[in-house]
Image 1 (cartoon, rainbow, N blue to C red):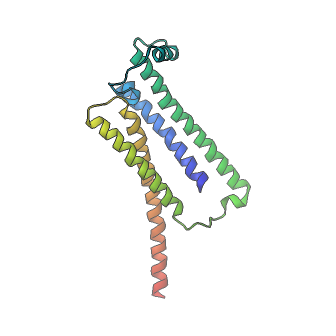
Image 2: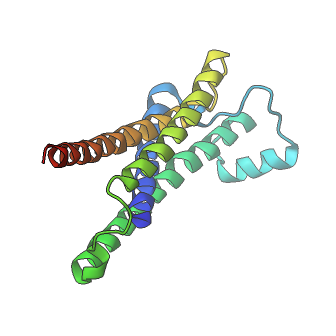
Image 3: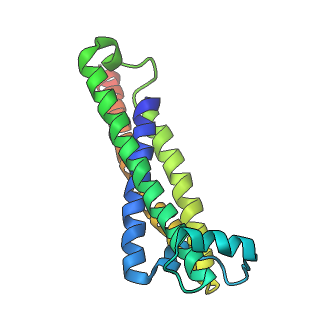
Length: 179
């Protein structure tokens, strides 16, 4: 169960990186990775940013480009790691029977954990993004929104799985009560 949840989480992070990249192309890289307007940079930090992004014209632009690369490419790398974890799990499940044996946990437990964790992540990330955008601070808001949208979709998928699991349990209980 934990391995499947970890793979799902890493894959979701990868998808959010692709969405953040699309947002950066659509709304500008500052929307995804810009620093708030009250941030100031020391000369030493600006020198670091210009070292990372020599094509930038200003320190703010260098910082934004550097952070954008981190937001998008680190998330995409997490997605690749998620594919590797999922592949290893599927390979192990085919190779060793004990990997695919039914868990001692009740049916629906994994869906409960997944819908809860991803639902909380969606609420926090979308809340942060919405509050930032509501006060007119668009710089960096896209990073929260892209991750929140993906978390919400994954939470909904787990919630649907939980509903189906509970429905099967309710139907079984109904049949048993009828005798």
